[in-house]
Length: 175
Image (spheres, one colour):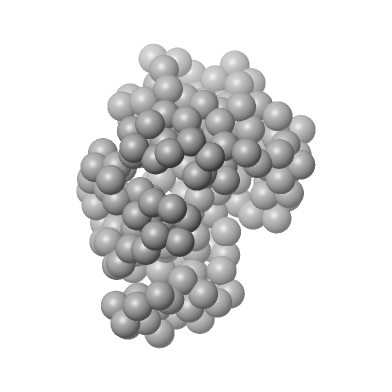
C-alpha cells in the first residue's frame, strides 16, 4: 500500500491536479460513452484549476507529492439554479445553500482501490458540507459504475437532463 497524504490543494499544485483531472476525465468520458469534446473538464486551463483551488475546497490525496485523487466541494448559495423539473424543485426548495461536488478524479492506475471512497468521505466530512445539509453532484447516467458508487454513498438520482449533449443525472444526499 502506498503512503497517502490528504490535504487541501495549493495554487502551486494546479498543473499536476490538472493532469490528474484530464487523465481521469478521459477515462470517465470513455466509460460513459460521451463523445469527445463534450466534457468541459477536458479543456479547462491550469488557470481555471488555480481559480477553483483558491475559491473552493479542493481536496487531494498525494503520493510522493503527486496528486493521485482529487475532489472539489463548492458552496452554492442558490441551489435552485439546478432546478429543471418538479422533482428537482421538491428536493431543493427547502435548502438555501448546497454543497456541490465536482472534479472527482482518481488516477487510472489506482481506480477501485478505495481512494475514491476515502476522498468522498473526506469531502462529506467537511464542516461546510454538513452546514449545508444537502450535497449535490452530476454524473453521466450512462456510467453505471459511478451511479452505483454514488448510490452506495447515500446519493439518490433526483433527475436528469441533456443540456451538455449527454444525459447528466443530478444526484443529492441529504445530511
